[in-house]
Every structure is written in structure tokens, then in C-alpha cells.
Length: 332
Image (cartoon, rainbow, N blue to C red):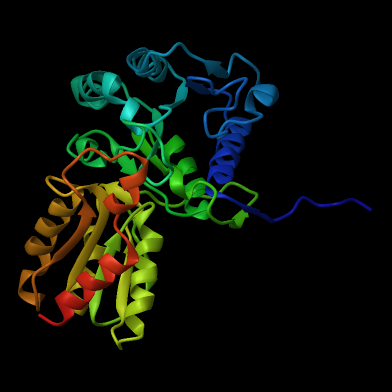
């Protein structure tokens, strides 16, 4: 009697990333992984654990500590028929590679009139909440949502992590794939063993209500959900939207929800000034201003560098802060 492979498995978010990489590397030999310590050590968070043993050193490449060099090399690989998936150990380490991404990766398709594409995926763990040192906890997704030519995705759960990663690898253009460090091992859920795709550019509604819309992504999604649950005790029921893709935004999903509820609360752990929340407010004003019953509220990190350990939790949005913002917009 033959034993069939399981249809799904319970995985953490970081395990779902590993599974997505393995799934695609089995299917497409042109996929190359590169990054600091991703080979023998399996990456700082073990997201590439076991892949060098399975696919060899020619496809899982440990690089020097040079983010600019990693990005530049990957761009050259991408325009010559390979599909590089590179890891920045932390999103805050991406700054040396910013010029390569901004000036080269995002522009080559336009610069060559479509003759060349850059099928490049940049994986980057991000965010506070794990008591990491300075620069390790930055949330600077807004830098990259201002770059035409690159997509920015940010899964909040294991199922979306695998499906969005596969979609990112199959995309012909660059994708920044953000992975919340504090979400890596917080919970498990069923993840199909086979290949599947979560469409880039589509938000997901996690809760339904008529009183307010709460918009979040990444590690802030469970915070938003917990806040919405708290508000039910007061008879306030919220739509909760997980954006999943930050560029391009799902304009239709945001507009549809806000036009129904007439109120919006945006939650992100990045700094308030020029954070992605400001763009979402502009989008709501463009599409849904006449539907609004109260000013839009934001719950964000503060305009300071992410503080060291003892103050880190004071920096991050909490369910209580989000709940107060929901109550404020409903009682306006």
C-alpha cells in the first residue's frame, strides 16, 4: 500500500517561506538563492534551512557582507535568464543596496523599452518586537512604495506567505517581499503542500462590520483583529482589511469598505510622518471622501528611531491604542 503525501501541513510563517522556496526551486532550475549566511547556516532566521543540502552550493550561495554587491549581482543574473531570490538579513540593512534597486532594478524594463525584465525577489525580515539591536527593527516599506517598477508585498500569515512568495518569484519584475520577524513563529496554520498562488495586489477581509474599517498589514494585522474583537464588547463592529500588497494597493477593496462604513483607522508600525498610512488617506479622499462620517485615524510608530529593548513595546501600536482610535472615529 502506497502512502500519499499530505495535502497540507501546519507551518509557521518562516516555515511557509522555506516551503515556498523549496517548491519553486524544484520546479525551476534557474532560481538562485543568495544572501549572507543563507547556505550552511540556513539564514539568521533559518528561512533557508536545509536548502543548500538539497540544491547545492551553485543554487544556494553564501555571499560576502555587501548588500550592494548582492543586489547588483542579482540584477545581472536576472537580465541574463536567472531568477535570483536574495535575502537582506534585515530590512534596515537594505540601505547600501538602495541605489542598485532604485537606479537599476526598477528602471531596466523602461530603460530598454521592455526588452529586458528583472525577475528579482528581495526577501527582507522587518519590524520591531523581537528586542533586536539598532537598525535591525526598521519598517521602511514606504521608501519602496514610492518606486515605480517594484512591487511590495507583506504577508501576515503562513498561507499567504507561501502563496505570495510563489507569485513574487513568477512575477517578471522586481518584488520586495517583507517578512515580519515577530510573526515568524507566533502561530501555525494549514498550508497546502502543493504549489498555489496568492494574487499580488489583492487585499483580504478578515472581519466584517458596518461601523468602521481597520486597515493593517504584516505584524499589525493580529493587532487590528484583536482591537476589532475588543470593540464588539461595546457593540462596534469593524471591517478588518489585511492589505497583503503595499504597492500596488488594492484601491477597490479599500474604497468599497470605507464607503460602506464611513470611517477608517489605519495601523502601521512605521513612523507616522510619510508612512504608507498617509497615502492610504489620500486614496480614501480620492475615492470615498463624500462617504466619510468622521476624520480618518492613524495608529503608528512614533517619529523616532525604533528604541532599544526596554522601550520597544512602547513604540509599537497595541490593540488598546487601536481600539481607542476606533472608538474615537465612531463617536465623532
